[in-house]
Image (spheres, rainbow, N blue to C red):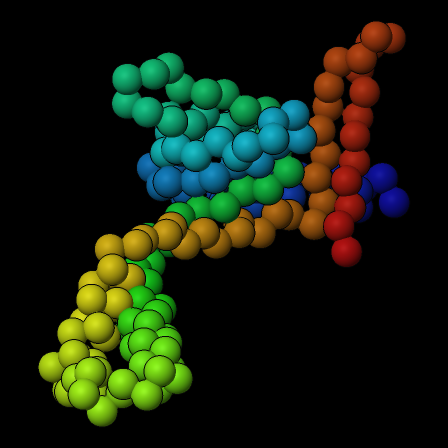
Length: 163
C-alpha cells in the first residue's frame, strides 16, 4: 500500500511540475487561502514548491507556495462585448418607441427610419466592442498532492486526495 502511495505521489508531483512548466511565460490568476484578491501576472518560474509571478515589470516578482494555491487559472485572451452592445442599442430603440407610442407622437417622430435604427444599433455595437473582459480557464489540479512542511515538533506531511 505504501509503495502505491509513493508512486502516486511521485506521479502527481511530476504531473504538477509538467503543468506548471507548460504555463511558464503565460498570464495567470492565482488565488490563495491567505489573500482575498487573486494575484494576476506572468508566471516566470515554477518549482515543485513555489510559483513565481511578475505582477508588473517594475516590481519584484511574487513568490507563492504551491501548498497555499487554492485556484490557478490561465488567461485565454480578451473578449469583446459587441453583441451585448448591439442588443443594448436595440433595447434603447425599443424603449424610445415605447415612450413615443404612449404619448401618441410616434408617426411624426422619425424613430421608424432605418437611419435612426441603424445609428442606435451601431452606437450600441461600438460601445460594446470597446468593453473588454479577460477570459480565464482553470488549470486542472492533480488528484493526489503531497506537501511536506516544517511543524513545531519537526516535519509534517500533508496528503490531499480529490475525487
